[in-house]
Length: 178
Image 1 (cartoon, rainbow, N blue to C red):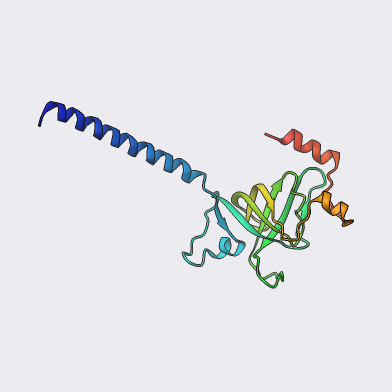
Image 2: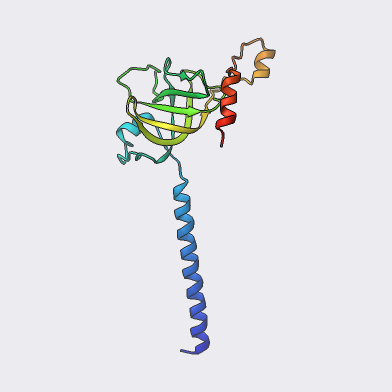
């Protein structure tokens, strides 16, 4: 083989190996940041198709309905916990339904309320009294097609209840922020 061809082959081979290594590193880095979506029943029983269950410490996204009567707020700070259940029709909450407790510290969205659909991003953990739970870093409230911004609701004469926080709660958020 011609020395010139050998040199070209070595350069092309090096470039291909470099592209392969970079692609592998990028895919590995992205796999660390993927949040898989689960419902409460899929967390406790596994996905229907594959039986896949999330492992403790895994970052996941969970969606479901906030169980009425399960929201517990700490009066000293912005910590809140609530239980999520599957979004099944008709909307009936039974103690036998699979539920997951979500722990969150921060200001909840205005649309957050009991019986409302939410999505939470966080890490799967296990708390002894409640079993499997999510340490949420973000809580997103869903709205239905009847959603109306606060300004329009006020103009239409409808009541819009916005969450209120004490000065002590807001101060604890400032001191505990990263």
